[in-house]
Length: 372
Image 1 (tube, rainbow, N blue to C red):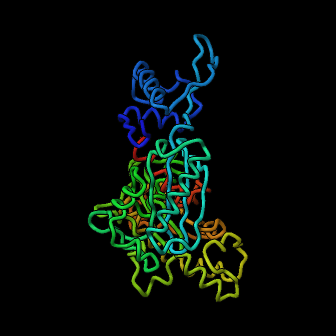
Image 2: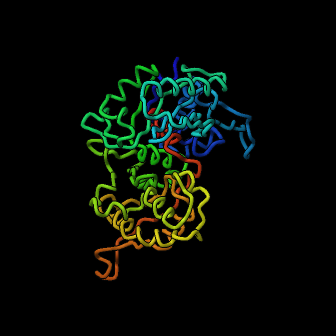
Image 3: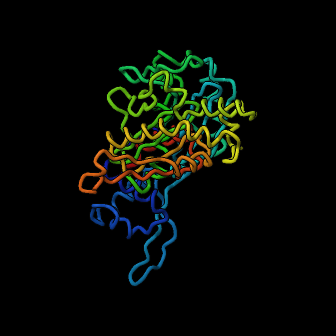
């Protein structure tokens, strides 16, 4: 069976996700973590093993009674690929069933012409799978992340001018035909939020908003453990709350680059910010300039979605995140009523340090098809 043809029941997804979060876990311990009987859990484990998703390890003695084998994900059977289409490059990632990134390649200067780019991407994915003695039959699907807004059918994207060739075409249909596998097309902020849900803050909360600081500034939401994209796929397009006059003061990294260059720093692109230190001239000034816009975004998110956690992520350097975290104000309209304000969200830096849009895109098929 091709991995792309795998279908799991709700209970199978629940058990597989439980193993993912706790592996290695004793077979006898799984039923205590799910609302299912032990015979049902054992039957589901057998089914998932037969489908090539789980494997039993050595039995471990944990007290009186028959030793119970440890259950693991079978990492060598199912893979997922992710593609991030950016203005200056394309990033391709391969992940395994455990949501671990195996390979990531950047194709620089290849994003302007869609059809040649798709051929290069296909060759990269084939090469990555080959390194693991796998092929497209082991591929559960491909996530494609791109910055832009979706139109009514969610297959057409209105992307930036440098990505004109990717805009206003049915990306889902074209990519599915080209790669001959299941395709998910999603906003890059939403794929980052999905990645955070699987390998970051989402391991401890079912409700959070991910703010993605990239060349632009956007967001994605996970509500009750599932991505929330809205009616047209454009939920948490948070930059839309700013007027044209306000956009230069929003916390987009394009504005940080411009500010740092004005202070004499040699930074040409977002990647150059990896060397940033909090003591750089102009850094704290930029944080103070953009803080009101970031506070407004957080107040709006709190008022509308009431998440448990707000994650600062994307390509935001940690020194900048630390400065923001020390200055952010959680505002409550009712903060004086009975001296009992509503609980604020926790605001944290991303807990998935290696997460990028391409890895988030690679985790999208796994989240959609296999995990709870």
